[in-house]
Length: 438
Image (tube, rainbow, N blue to C red):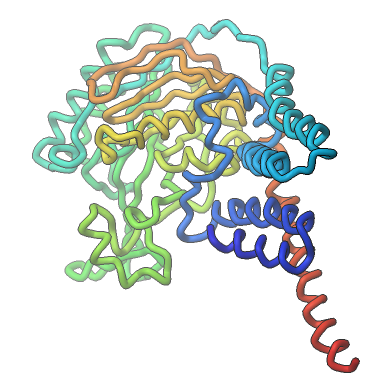
């Protein structure tokens, strides 16, 4: 974060206040853009996320995504700074310009805010929140049977003739299994028995899985089992199961730095991160998003796993592949009762606005929720409570401008940064070679 500020200082010092302030905006937005895709990506602190609790102000995110919010924050602060430093003769127009920058986006939001659509869905979704402690119980193999039965009981208490989707949270099935042997796994037969008892439903759940590559190290993240002499990848995955239909997997693509993956230049810290519940070898991952389309189910779901819900532009890939419902599976219990799980829920509201899709959010320990396509939370279950939500959620088709075109503001900022840097280096070369001749 110091790099764009250092760049701003350089441009302001060499080329004046206006170019300096322009460079601040361009360099900061470029930093946020680059930060979305490098190996230590943690876009939690993207400036545009700050409005997550006030989605009525940012309905125009369906055009810009969070990049528009980041631009708004930067421009508003620059204008307020300009007011504080303006002369008496320029103060009134500067104040007027600052007020315009502050107010116009809110006004625009009310112009583009869709009317509250009444829920007209004839089918419903069951969202399960089992509330299993990730520190003491969740990954204890001895408790797996009880965990699965708890998930099934919470589901069956709410299923009716209109239920088409049951959603369980991230790693709801915690014992790792080979993906090609999942349907034969003894510990998960109760899950298949549950689905067979309800042939009209589709179960979507988080699961820990592995993929066997034999004696070939097929991926950079593949680990070697020294006893068997094979290479394999471990995945934090999602799976859909429906009676009479083949199962389908999605392997989490956006991994949490330190806990699920390590950048190449930090692999030497692997043993330290393992003590925090992470993995030195790193999880494997899919290269792109997958939309789950199951025969007989009106919902084409985006299987968003935990941390992935922070990546607005990545989420658009699910919608481009046909998803008409965003389904977030998460285990926010790692944070315990801190602001982390609340912020994570709020950020999901931004994804609803950007895509104009409804969201079904299943969180292991909470907060599970239904969020409409305006970013409003319609129903939740409280933190640290075993519960379920049954809600008639509509499947919404179509794509927003942001889904079709991505974060154009970030792209423009990157272009502006390239131009600024090119100009700066040309001036350096000009001074060095032409100046020396003079």
